[in-house]
Image 1 (cartoon, rainbow, N blue to C red):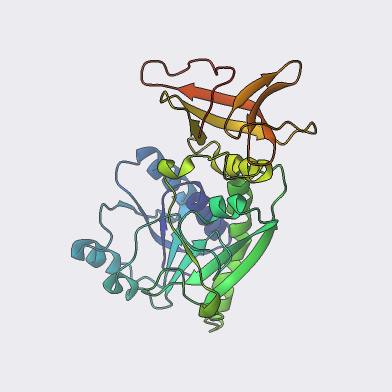
Image 2: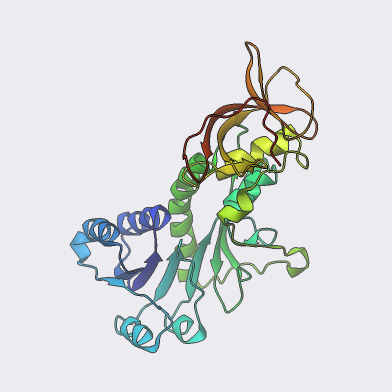
Length: 299
């Protein structure tokens, strides 16, 4: 297929672009946010044989941007990690429509941060969906989908890598279906659930409200490349929990207490039992790395 315009903002989009180029598809343009010179250079290298223009657009719905994207006579828009909502004038441009790479099972995981939420919720597998986009939010027909196992040791970083890799062949499958006139399968709106986009303010771990297993899932869902889950004591010290585990030994006590058990390590007591802190970073207004204090209470 020729005339594909790709909207991307990071690794997922680069994986998608590589899959399209290697699959023999013609890229009419790539759209990125402004101020991303290294990303633009990588895109130029990937699409060098096609001499694809890279457009840095601050507002893709602005009339001047819509007019610029009208020029290549787009056949298909592909959204890969580009969070801006597309308005009707923009959506009307491609003759075959707009595909969105959504890293969640639909309709249960519409909305923001779907990979993080699926880990937090203790899912044993995660869904990847390619949707035909309309004016709604993640409610369009499903053109292609797959499931990835979510191993107990997986983190958000490894899951992003797995999802980016899996989207490549899924994109080619979706385009093949479109070219055959298949417009996908409608979602069951009666099962729809929307999740909000997560920010660092949502990263506070409340040990009194979560079991050790739930706390473990929460931490691995928010670790690098994200800032990390955090707990805070009554003096304002914020502790970033980067790596934890549910230990074999059972330790209980006051939920929220960080304690060091002789010869066993450092622990945070949760609602039912403690998790072991393997890697953490303490932050404060005056010292970015104060020591974790034996006996501190967080909540």
